[in-house]
Image 1 (cartoon, each protein chain N blue to C red):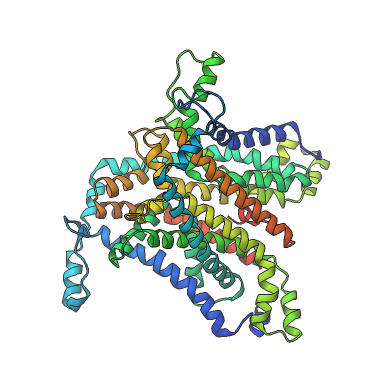
Image 2 (image 1 turned 120 degrees about the horizontal axis):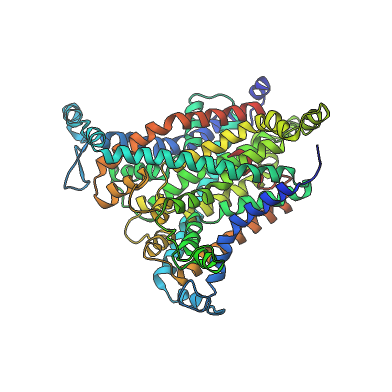
Length: 309
Length: 271
């Protein structure tokens, strides 16, 4: 494969190089470089100026300017974050919420994926589209739809009162329950689809063989189906867990004002207090927390491509 | 093993789909509610749509959002397709690992981090924030989604067609445009639609990178939602859902007409 590629390139060598270079430079400029700036800013100090931080790197001052610039950097924002318990609590809370929500998503998403994979072949593309479709419709709108339902005189409480399940309408909004509903609702397609992708490819004769050898269905599920789908489960869990740790919109609109998650913290520091250096330091620490799962996810993805090539 | 769906499978599917669709259905239904009280049904009416039509700020936001969406989706489609070709076709090149990382990281990166870092870049290079900075931010995020979709199509693509063309003396560039591009066109089309809908929907990147005069629809909707539920917002949301649905139907029809076998299926399988 490799040698054939070398013999017959798809296009001229310089054209190929150009095709790599354009997206490469774009991402380096608008994705990688900004992180360097965040890192630098997290070591800076807030100032009443425009931009609202010092030191500002001044190219015209040359080497002396660089030395002065480096000397002015300090880790005090990190010390500040570490010393105030509210930040640590907020990181823990984010990890806890994301973990529990991922577990809920697995519990709800796996049966749906399983049902899809076991549905008649002709139905599967339609079911697939049905699960993908909400993912394409606006995220903000889907959260808004839940505010409609969960508000105090909303449809959920109307239904509960009408059925006589509760006597007084309970508050749903601004509770953890609402946050979990929002998270599960928004991320469900991300959990279902990777699991479905592995289950769909599964060789069903494996289950028949297990049954022929006298294995009861639940045991066959445990010994055959689950291990086969493990890759999809892990991919789905990572795909949900990582962004949920930094989630902002869902806890902001559905959750309460106590126990904020770290994404909200960053948002408030930035837009509310206009403390850009502290917001940057929060972002850097959050990135450090997520770098291991993110690299694991990328590793899985590249392996999947290599295998299929 | 028993063939066909069991009661358990049918129940879990039905409950799952109901959970996914009921809230959206309720939202659409209540946008046609005559009553101002969003929780009481007061009969059918289109008055909120009429009021929306006279809300100039909202219309202006819609226009800005559409322009950003189309522009960023077009740029993301070109960049993402090139990136997919680079990942699948060009073998090993220097920095391939980093390149792959930069494609996959934005898919899962919390948007508050991406948004903050892009804003700081724009401040550092001192550009006026607004329409163009949002467009760049959206292009950067959505090109990665396009790359993943197109790459999935390139991976299960029969390369002997290209080789046959080149063996018959077709130059590489012509081969690309007459053989390769038409074959991956369905994936490119669904990449474009996804990029467009992601841009229409984005609140966080837009909030960080926006400037005076560029209030996108999600930013406006968000500030209204924070004040409570309003029937006009139900109407806006219903229109947005309709736009996305029409775009999706158009995209899948395009895929059907061009004879694509797998339609937009790879998206979920790949993510």
